[in-house]
Image 1 (cartoon, rainbow, N blue to C red):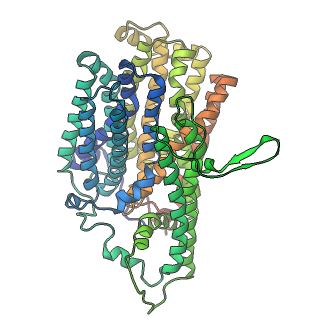
Image 2: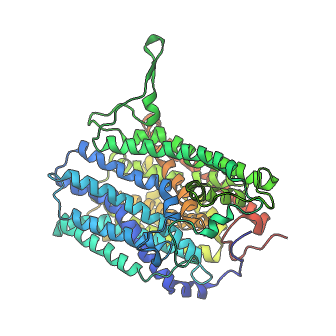
Image 3: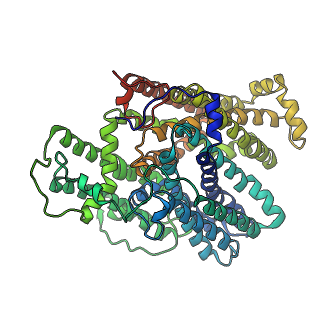
Length: 601
């Protein structure tokens, strides 16, 4: 059963009215508050450290900050189920959003009072706490967006507005942050941004609540626990046996992440597990199972290697295997095996295991039970839809600066100023397409456009003659030479290429977030959305090594052709998911169906 009833597709008047909704305004604020720390902690912070003459090896510690965003799903059950006693009256999501924004504001203000080179320990600690607070805020904001969506402020519109706020914040915290810092200094810049986050936190107090209303207790309510003991539910002893496996898997993931963080910050963790030696000098160190690989030259573990080798196992331990366990439990309920019979009474309810079961397994059981076997298709689409963008980001600047020999100013103009504007325009166009064309058609077109833009870069890799011809033909070269006289004759074709790529990214991004938001339950939005979105963050990290080797061996042109074909796989999966939803109708498991969707007979 879906949780929303399909309505007639809205016209442009309804779209404009949705833009004026109170929820839409707060969504823009929350999007800005989500994007600004991301840009500051993972971007401009390095510029500040560079100016402070902090050495590159020491700066490597800050690269682990990105892990907070990649692995945020691990603590998403806490955000979904734990209420903060002093703040629970704010609402289920706001009790997390507002304090995280206050913490972020205080941290940014405090960073402005520190000297990076002489107080690096405090600096790195606060940046790490800030990244955790930012990632936690993102979990709650994504859930809030799904909770508050309604017929006026639709999920598609809110998803688009969120991303526009996020991208604007990236511009403010990135390129404009550099400009501001050059004029007033880094401490004053971070003080300014910290104050802006605090203002958003204050404004967030007045944001509307979702359907859940006010949170009334710490943890799941008695009615939620009582549901576990209803007739037809899996018996307590059976579900606890399955829960133990999930706890062991999540416990292992948390343990290796904790060990990595301690070692990355220079702490000592003894390698207490044995080493098994084989013939010919071969051996296996069981400490590797805890992520304790040899340290690099700086005396710290490499975050990229850690994510490359342990990212897939963490996903397996915290998403794939628990999903299989959830499917087994759902199957028992469907087949009426090991379930509570009429008249069967439990001796005790509401223990720690019941709460853990509600937090970790129930969201997965609901998701698996609602979607069924097509969950495999959905996971494949999540993994492939944004993979090209996620991987390419690391190699963009080496391609622009090294391969194509553009200057820093030219790249900054094309990618930061013109490029960000193109993404925002693409998001606006994507939001309009979502309303007029529908979610699945926009999702498919976004995947197709994103795939085809790789061919534009392939042309750039072999000289860019076609892109230069197209830029000259439409007068774009004259425009760029007028507004950017500092650039070379080759700048227009780079800007032209980035413009089309970012327009496609904007359209695809708007559609992807809207689609992802539509398939998660409002009741378990924090956990389900965090689990799915984390896959898109991790898959890029895991593919960069192989792509880097291919660039080294075969060059950029072959890589762009390959990523085009990978993009076509995502197009095919979009068509398959579109066909599935149209055939299944209300039984497709989509929580927020499209306006034109019709229930199945």
